[in-house]
Image (cartoon, rainbow, N blue to C red; front, side, top):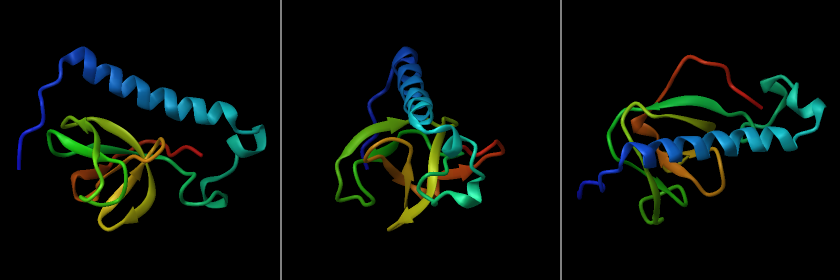
Length: 114
């Protein structure tokens, strides 16, 4: 396995900010009724919960498997928003076509969002 390219701190922070904008932007588009719905009323793919990355250089892939191209990297201890959807051992992350190996993601304390 090759090691991921080293990112500068500003590039890592930009990636985190983009993830936050994706989540916040998605919430801004929801109707008030959707934004206040309890997580059990929403489908599993709509509920986003925080997960901590447990390995440095976790590949973010465009689909749920190693046959899908990498579209980004996550550093150790990064916090990402993800759904409860797991396919082929990959968890779906917030955003479009973003998946990461579930074995390197650990559910953290924190509120899930619809």
